[in-house]
Image (cartoon, rainbow, N blue to C red; front, side, top):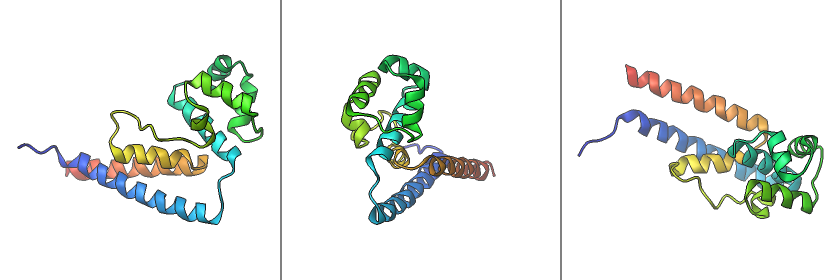
Length: 150
């Protein structure tokens, strides 16, 4: 039986560690305060929009809203009405629950379990945590690749 190269396993291990760390961080954060619904909606709209490969303008056209409205929702300067959330959900082809409570019960097909876990954890984080996590993963993957070349 042939074994795949070690690099994917190392990356897989690194991602598993990152998921575990983010999970502990999230549990500690959630213990101190509950994420307000406006923050969950903001994060969900942005992550679902980008996952569908849509710009704010494209989503606004599909939902029958202004691009400014989508921008203000994503940046938490506007809390949308339930009707607006419903229009956005329909435009994205998801249930309202996917936006309101970040329903991540549907993992992305084809992604390994740790990546789905990582996506689910990062979707709930503020932009600065997502950006820092992306930089960290890039550094770790680069280090693992460099180590594999030696």
